[in-house]
Amino acid sequence: MKLLTTPVLALCVAIFALPVSAQVTERVSVEQDTLIATLRIERQNRNAQTLQREINAAMEEALNESEAVSNVKVSTGYYSVYQTNTAPQGGRPDQVWQGSQSITLEGKDAQSLLELAGEIQGMGFVMNDLSYTLSTERADEVRDGLMESAISRARANAERAAAAMGKTEVDIATLDIDAALGYSQPVMMARGMAMDSMEKASPVAEAGESEVSLTVRIQAVAK
Image 1 (tube, helix red, strand yellow):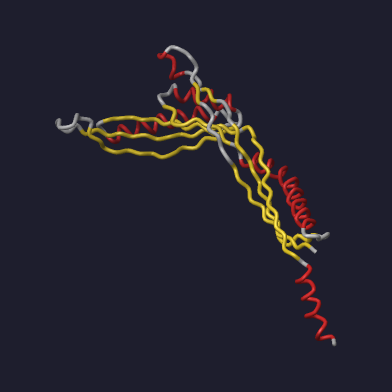
Image 2 (image 1 turned 90 degrees about the vertical axis):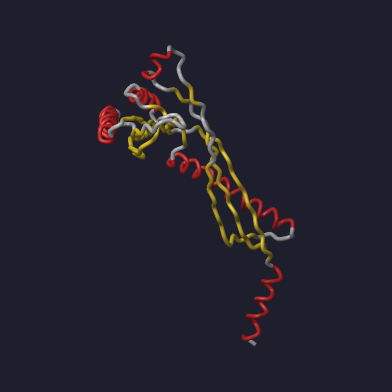
C-alpha cells in the first residue's frame, strides 16, 4: 500500500498545481551626476623627434595642471604619430609628421572639471568630447530602490493570475532580475565672447537624464 501512495500524491499535485508567471518593469529618470571631458593636443612637424617632444611637453603641462584638482580623475588616451602628405593632389609630395594625444577628465564636481578643461584648452588642446553620464554607484543605488516595489508588483500580478484560475495560494519557484541603463546626451554650450579669448574660456555643459530600469520575472506555482 505504501508503494501506491507516492505516485497518487504526485498525480494530485500535478492536477491541482498550475504554473503562473509574471513580469514587471520599474523605470525612473535620474539626473546624470558625472561629467567627462576628453581633450587632445595636435602637432605637426617635419621632424618626428621634435614633434614627439612637443606633444610630450604639452601633455606634461596638462598633467601638472591637473594635479592641483584632486576631485577630478585624469587619464591619458591614445597617442598617435604618423607621416602624411600635405601637398595638394597632383603636386610635389610634401611629407610631414602629424601627431596627437588625448587626456580625459572625469568627476562629479562639474565646476572644477570645466575650469580645468578651460585651462587645458588654453594650452592649445582642443575639446574632443564633453558629456554627462550616470555613475555606477548612483545607478546601483536607484536600482536597489526599484527592486522592492518591482518584486511586490510582480508577486501581486502572479496572485491575481492565480485567483483568476480559482487558486488561492502562490509559491514562488524562480525570481529573475534584469537591470538596464538608458542614456540621453546633454547639450554642449560655449559662452558668448570674442573669438580671440575662446580658447581660454571654460567650456559649459548641462546634465541630462539617464533612465534606470529594473525588470523582475517570477515563475510561480498556483495551488
